[in-house]
Each structure stands twice: as structure tokens, then as C-alpha cells.
Length: 274
Image 1: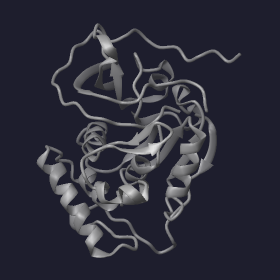
Image 2: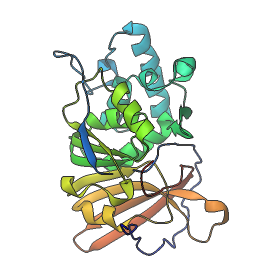
Image 3: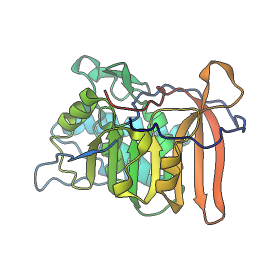
Image 4: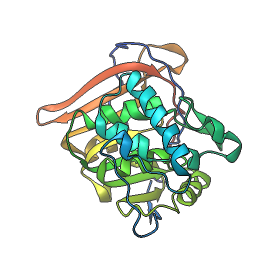
């Protein structure tokens, strides 16, 4: 039997501030498939909120996304690349038709199999932390927990190459279908155990996870490049009830530096596939 991935020592840090939120993507991998994509000739721009595109739903949809981005800026998101990418990706394409009217609200929504699409405020917060003020695009990025594919689509605008792993076959297939209308040649969808990461794509400039465990799997740390940053929810030590907080892990030439930020609530990190 294949051994379960091991964990390093648990965190002993405390919360810096409390900003609860609800997220839902599952941990996940290893069987590679390439994400489908946009019709040839379609261009996605991320230079500004004004450059947000509408892929078939007119200016009304673009205006709705622009208002969402304005709210994110009001919440403290300042990275123009993140705001531009959030404005460019049509979130309503990734939710059930019955929930489209809530697609641009700052709330998580169910996507099936007990999972949810993360609220825009959480997605933008984690991606801003991941970018860490970098002016241009990141290099190769690993996402743990593809979910419905929304964050993967946003990531594809922020990095030169994205590997996204999902452990639930139903969600992996749904993400592929949701992304079918796009032509994201730099996005690769993987089905498998995300706790193992994806060694074939390493080293990664950044890793972002949408499921929280008691600590960061050692495989993720090993696959993170020196100078790279990992952002993930982690169960905080000494707190009952499995409370989670956002962890920022920087891998430096001198070793690993960990910073624990606000409280969050993600689905549990699990091994294996289903």
C-alpha cells in the first residue's frame, strides 16, 4: 500500500487577526490532462479593471464584475494584477445556473459533492499574498484543489504556467467542462492526491491550497522553489474544534519561514482520490 504523505511539525504560532470566511475546494494529484480553452483570437487582458473582458455576455456582465472588483479594492486588495484578473474571469460561468444571480456577491456557493466555490474576497486575498507584491507574472504555480476551476482560471492570468490538482473525479470533470470554452494553454488540470503535490512540475514559484490540514505536507515544501511562497489554510495548534488560519510559508536559502494570519474556514485536507 502506498504510504500516506508525511507532515512536518505542527505550527505553534497564534492568529494575528480574525477575518473569518468560508471556502470550499478539495485537496487533490497525479494523472495529467490539459485544460481546454478560448476560441482562437480571443484575448484576455488583466492590465486594469476597465480591461476586463466579457466572453459572450455583453457589457452588463462586465459592469457587474467591475463592481465586484471595486468592492474587493474596498476590502483592502491593492494588487492591480489580482484585481485585473478577478475582473477578467466570469465567475457566473463556474456556478450552477440557479445561483447565477449571486455569482458576483462576496460569498461562497455550493458546487456539488459537499464543496463550494470560494468567495471572491478569499480568492483575491490568497492570490495577493501569493504574489507578494511582484510586478510581473509569477512563474510556475501549483494549485491544490481545483474545485469548479474558477481560481485556476484566475491563476492562469497571474502565472506563466499553472498545474491544478483535484482529488474528486466529479469536480475534476466539472472543472474541465467549465473551462472548455477557454483556451488556456498555460493551465494543466490534474486528477489525483494533492497531498503529494505534483513533482513532475516542480520546482514551483508559488503553491496555493484550498483545503486545510493540521500542517503543510512535506511534499509541498520540497516542491516549492527557494524564494517561493506557499499560501494555505492550516489547523492552528492548541485550538479546539479544528479552527483554521491562513498560513504564508516562505522558502528561503536559510530555511522555511512561516507566518499565520487571519482565521478562515476551508474544507479538510484529505489524501487519496474519490
